[in-house]
Length: 142
Image (cartoon, rainbow, N blue to C red):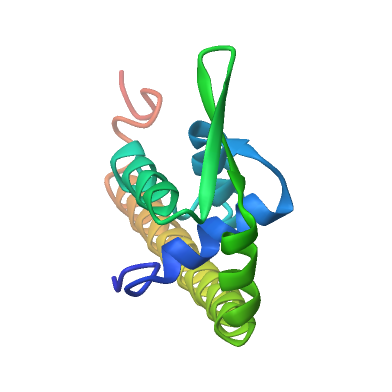
């Protein structure tokens, strides 16, 4: 499977999420998982270094609340987000299309598994009838 985010796209999406509201890293991870309907959940090792890099670039900053870093977008971050609105719109279309394709693949896999299971059950029933029901609840036993 291709990466969910091409080079630099997660960075852009993180800015979008922080533009919506300040968030701590774990909340960002959970929100990404939710937006991807559980089909993608980045690791802390993916998100936190990118947040730190955004902070080093002056695009986000953080405060500490309850022992957690809460990240907020800066004016410079908003400016970058505004400059890249076209790219962000393309990214959101790609995400929707990717989710639709993944959902279709999952539906097909489930449908195929159900077909295989029905076929196997019919074969087992035929086999049980052909062997006189032996082993099927003791039918045919003395």
